[in-house]
Image (cartoon, rainbow, N blue to C red; front, side, top):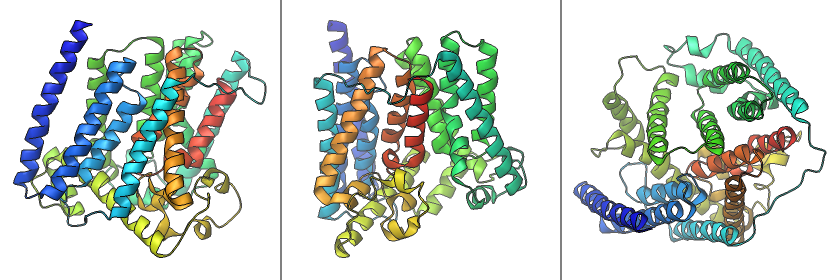
Amino acid sequence: MEHKVTLLICAIACLIGIDVMLCLRYAAWGCTLAELLPFLFFLILSEALILYSIYAFKELINPFSVYGIFVYITGFSFLIISDRQHAYSPLFMGIILLSIASFIAGGMAAYKTKKLTFRNIIPTLSPKLSFAFLLCLLLAGIGVFVMEIRQLGYLPILNLGNTALYDELNQNPVTPLHNFILLNSVLPAMFYITYKRRLIPFWVFLACSIVSAFIIVNFFSRQVIVLFFFSMLIGVSYYRKISILKLLSIAAVCVILFIILGQLRGGAAEESTLTSVNDFLKQYSGIDKPSNIFETYLSLYGGLNFTTGNNIAEISVYDNYIGYGAYALRPAVGVLPVDTEAIYPMKYSAYSLLGTYMIDPFLDFRWFGVFAFNFLYGFLSMNSFKNYLNRGSPYYIVEWSLFVFCVFMCSFTNYFNLFFVVFFFIINRLAIK
């Protein structure tokens, strides 16, 4: 116990030193007190949330530690280091504060109460049928992959020198069947569960995983690859303990791969360095500060997204636009033969414009939506984490991975209410539960 307290004190001391250095660094950039104070507030809140959660749950990856990353990005977004950023309105600052407070409240409510489990409506598949079902899903993914590659005209992994690669991938017409390709981000974790159940030999698990990895790598979607890493990491952690040092090392590798993949999908030259990448991104983002590549990414995927969210919130209030639950029902609407652009106008689309996850709840039911949905996100995330910790069923490997992914991507858009995430939940229940 004394050893843990000593480590906690040392961690707090180190963080205080880092906080002071960061504040001095950004003050030297010309950031005003109006920028530094909210940055410092959310920085301390993020650190407190992460330290408390690791100390309380004995797990590095937990709802509060992952959400703490979003809280930190929130604070960083207050630093105006891009000429495309601007100060937030009181309305958006209220949305930020209520969102964070509600998520934490929901998580604490789940932590302090008995964990919930939900039974399947349909009968559970036998282990052998479960593997056959997963194999059929893999074959379906291969079929859709071949179809989309034929439309594109080439194999992306073999065309890395094409500077228009990413644009061509985005413009390549896809159908709802594309979800079977995205499903390959979690299929390896499901095959891993099947392997640990001793239903298949290791080489079968490895072969299926290699096929899935090949499919998702060809589409250069960093979000999908992040989900792949989360699901496999959480799957391995379910069956054996991984040290914090190894987890941090894996996280560092993931960050590097995230940067490299961004270069590859942009058709960058092989001799590109982190410095040249940073210079390109700074020019693209309108940054004239001496930021390193990590700060540049935080501005590009943090500050600019939060600015977009601020704009959407302001426009929706000005236009008196309310969704009345349409955004929460996006998974159901997405599979209906309706004009989704008419239901979700582009100028209010935090999904298309990347306006953070906070905007959809606000568009649906204003302040009540911000509180209710964030409380629900926090509650369900913590409840899934508790079930995962209990090791009662490997089903919670993929379920918890999906929540980790949704929380991790909060600074981008609201993945909680996207069809492919709900689709993955359903597949997981059918195959593993």
